[in-house]
Length: 125
Image 1 (cartoon, rainbow, N blue to C red):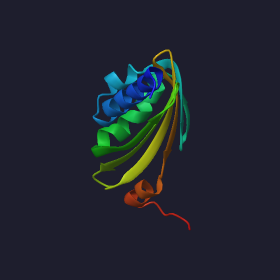
Image 2: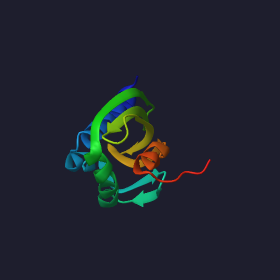
Image 3: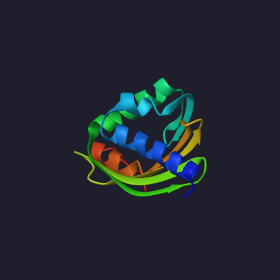
Image 4: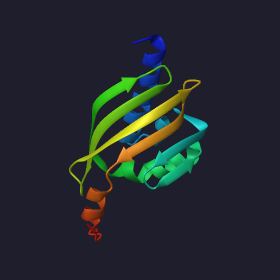
């Protein structure tokens, strides 16, 4: 792994660890001011908006386990599993694009179905 690859992974892992432990102030420090986050619920733009989007989920976590990390010179891919009181396992993955030692873009993939079922939402087949 090159030094540049290692730096991209280091930034992504630091961000992930910060938000999964509820330290949204520290997590936000890794985000570019104009960060773009693509999530299953839509696109969120800007550091403050991404922080506000992540905060309720981060606050609900009872556990988080980092499963895998991969990096290139300007990207890092993290796969993880999270849990909260309602959902014992919620795997996800995030692809981070790094520019100037900040996260410029995040692509989040996770299955929303376990959360819908936990809320008692009716889900069509």
